[in-house]
Amino acid sequence: MAEEYDLVILGGGTGGYVAAIRASQLGLKTAIVEKSKLGGTCLHKGCIPSKALLRSAEVFATAKRSEEFGVVTGDVTLNFGKVQERKNSIIEQLHKGVQHLMKQGKIDVYEGIGRILGPSIFSPMPGTISVEQKNGEDNAMLIPKNVIVATGSRPRSLPGLEIDGDVVMTSDEALQMESLPKSIIIVGGGVIGIEWASMLADFGVEVSVIEYADRIIPTEDKEISKEMQRLFKKRRINVVTSAKVLPETLQKGDGVTISAEVKGEVKAFQAEKMLVSVGRMANVEGIGIENTEIQIDKGVIVTNEFYQTKESHIYAIGDCIGGLQLAHVASHEGIVAVEHIAGEKPEPIDYRLISKCIYSSPEVASVGYNEDEAKEKGFNVKVGKFSFRAIGKALVFGESDGFVKMIADQDTNDILGVHMIGPHVTDMISEAGLAQVLDATPWEVAHTIHPHPTLSEAIGEAALAVDGKAIHG
Ligand code: FAD
Image (tube, rainbow, N blue to C red):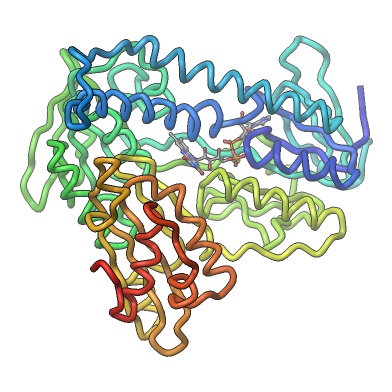
């Protein structure tokens, strides 16, 4: 069977399926090839399941301190089976939603492993896609005018640190745990490691985080890392930084032990389970890249700002091109690629203006340069900071740790970055993103009157604080 298309998308994750919907809106005859499940990592092994578990952990932790709010509940216990059931039903509901969107957009979905072929009887150019179909049908041959590679990424491990999926896990296996361990070692204090540390600590698991850098979440502003580390310590999460895990010391038996070199000293760690969260690798193998001129650099596909590879009719988006490996980045890259294919003139993405979120407790959200980056770029930096401790709504919530930090340019008054740690900041960062897209000044943000009492007042106050004029600070 051979079928012609305007566009075939390899991979139906967030990047791929959103690209398909945009393509259908623009009238392109489109197909998606997906070897597992539509929705990809984000829906099945990433954003959604992890946030569902985080929410259960938050409810559990809040219920345990309910008397603080005058609510007497008696013993609070956890039914982890039900926690997993809830997570799975949310995934299922959203999965059905994506399937429906494909039908609605008249997008053909091929279930199977897709591979790019070189020049063939079907086309003198590389790009024909062969699909090894899951349902036992013969291989399908798709002949597209354009291709988008959106094959995503998978967890990375450390050389020598073998993942067995039971005692030593990545986030993929951890999401499927049937019961909670008593204790866990988390190798890697980046975004995924920190979310898991926070969630498991809220569930009552004893957590140690071992991080190679000199601070956890090292890509965030230094003050945010410091505050997170302080709050983790308060929650008895053992955070060890400047620590190089020694994979050869891994021992499994009754649980797991491993040593790490911490500031010149070798220290041993012991727990029931281990979670390795040391980043993700692009899926670029086994998809026929060798049949094309597509370039791979440092393990990711190389593209221009419209996501064209060296083969100008083959595009690549999302986690498989590296950079910010986030769902909203993948989907937006997909939209830009499709609009470029359709001959529209999309704006290239300004990656500095992309908001990044961590859904731990407390949450972290940021957009733009952090203070060190702004200084390194040569800006004459001024900073406004405002604590949630002085925000009425935060006290009402019983969650007043953290702050909002706004960084601006003394010379032009431009906002250079906004960094937040505290309650619900992931839902508030878009205001800071919009302010930067619209080139707003701190004064303009402050004079966008923030309703009282809301957590967003902290943004208005931080904006005023940039010029030393915070009202409640
Ligand atoms: P993917 O979602 O990985 O999709 C790629 C798809 O391609 C997969 O479905 C795969 O089966 C398919 N595929 C691969 N090869 C082939 C082939 N040869 N043929 C057919 N199909 C193929 N991001 C956020 O923005 N917010 C979050 O809160 C967040 N939380 C996360 C939590 C965790 C634990 C993890 C692991 C990730 C998280 N992410 C989060 C990152 C986010 O999931 C990814 O950035 C996003 O899924 C990337 O989308 P994508 O379309 O590039 O790739």
